[in-house]
Amino acid sequence: DLPTRVRIHEVGARDGLQNEKATVPTQVKARFIHRLADAGLTTIEATSFVHPKWVPQLADAEQLFPMVADLPVALPVLVPNERGLDRALALGARRVAVFASATESFAKANLNRTVDEALAMFEPVVARAKTDAVHVRGYLSMCFGDPWEGGVPIAQVVRVCRALLDMGCDELSLGDTIGVATPGHVVALLAALDEAGVPPATLAVHFHDTYGQALANTLAALQQGVTTIDASAGGLGGCPYAKSATGNLATEDLVWMLRGLGIDTGIDLGRLVATSAWMAAHLGRPSPSRTVRALSHE
Ligand code: HMG
Ligand code: MG
Image (tube, rainbow, N blue to C red; front, side, top):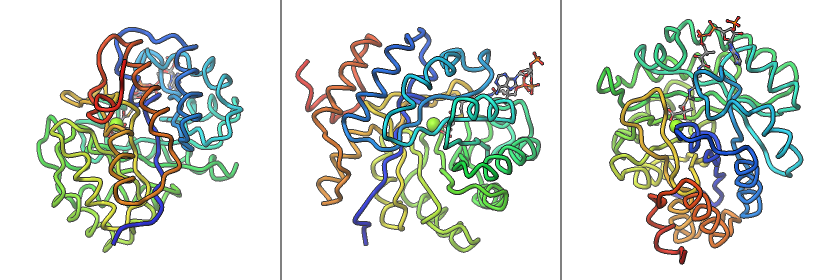
């Protein structure tokens, strides 16, 4: 059975741009987010309040956020710690995301912490956000495979998911950071999570398309009852702290599939494709999205 409604969590402006070497001007990022909203996206991850040395591309979060804050869409932002939360709250952010790892190697590379030290760092962040009725997403990276450790045991993923949920996260996003998941693995993980009291309704899936499996994995997750799907306009993306991570599932590819399945998203595909083609021109290379290439005439 497939859901009748799907919520797309657009990550192009954050996950999509964070790995770009050349600094994208703040004005261009703001325009990108405005165009995504015009195309009908309703949840647009805007930026990260992380250490600027760790992700230089997003060092302009303080300048960017006020330029998009008035849009009538949800604008989640990443915050790794209380310092990040302070910065986000000072600008009026109403949705934040902490980002944990299922593996020790990535926790170290991405957060300079062990898995449990990172969870301890998030605890006061989530508690304070909840006090302010701020919505909290908990990302979990390396749910399927890790570039240093190889395959990731399902039990390891379940443990950290439970910890994030027990901490008070409203929603969890299962990250296939390096794009190695396949549909059978997705079904097995979702079943194990459900059994551990983490039902599909609390979950989002976050696929990267390294091996061309993102759409197949998404369909598998939809069939298991997941209704929030992360995607990146034009398939932009990658993680600076994960070797071999390529772009996310392209939002256009997702919308095309959902349309064919009769699942309405309210997104204007023509406007979205034009936005991604415009961003690709700005970045100086074509979008990797098959749907963008098929539908764009630039
Ligand atoms: P650290 O070096 O351990 O930091 O980094 P610290 O806690 O020791 O603090 C050192 C200094 O940084 C201090 O300043 C802090 O104030 C400052 P000093 O006293 O030395 O002058 N500082 C900050 N400044 C601004 N904003 C902050 C902040 N925090 C500390 N928030 C830290 C630890 C977590 C800060 C660092 O590792 C970091 O910023 N990491 C972010 C990495 C990142 O953003 N990765 C990409 C996102 S995750 C992802 O892409 C995966 C995802 O898409 C899902 C998937 O695909 O799997 C979500
Ligand atoms: Mg990602």
